[in-house]
Image (cartoon, rainbow, N blue to C red; front, side, top):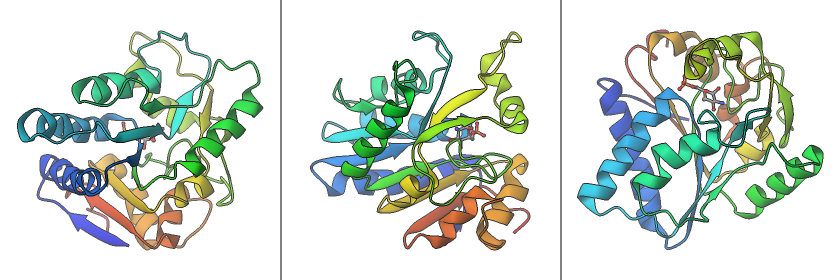
Length: 240
Ligand code: GLP
């Protein structure tokens, strides 16, 4: 595992953007796995800037979301699909049909999980962008998730629901369920890139990169991957 500690939060986003840019420029058709959350929003803003000012094109890219809340209205701005549309797709030249996500409104949710798992596996993902939860989750694989897990419906932990409450504002409840790629699905990507900033992530980062590989810390699965890069700001790296 390669660990890079950048000078600050902005430099961490730029460093992550360098890796994404290299990946996108290296192939004519690319499958990019995308995460949501405040940390990756800065990365997407930097990619949008490079598109607008540096000619970085996403025309040959397909993006695949890691996860999606269940139980929100189709037009709810908190849906991860809307977040990726807003933060990345509409800011760059991604094709209209290039954003792929699990559909939480499908009548047969189990079937939808299988469909999405198959779609992601057959993409296959060349570079997967990841964030980390303060409890060590990746995507919505909460502590205790099996490293063999695939795309499925999961309950969200109280910690995650409280961490994500800020996105919902005005006291709206955070959904209790989500669809998430499994840890095995994520590990199948050719390359992983985890971005973490802020001292709220320091303990989880330390456990993930230098603690034992165990299902209690889902992000520790990255230690099993042959090509994983972790980019941190000094606060997130403070317990290493
Ligand atoms: C959510 C997402 C994760 C993401 C995490 C971190 O829980 N499902 O994929 O890693 O948020 O979010 P933030 O960057 O806002 O801390």
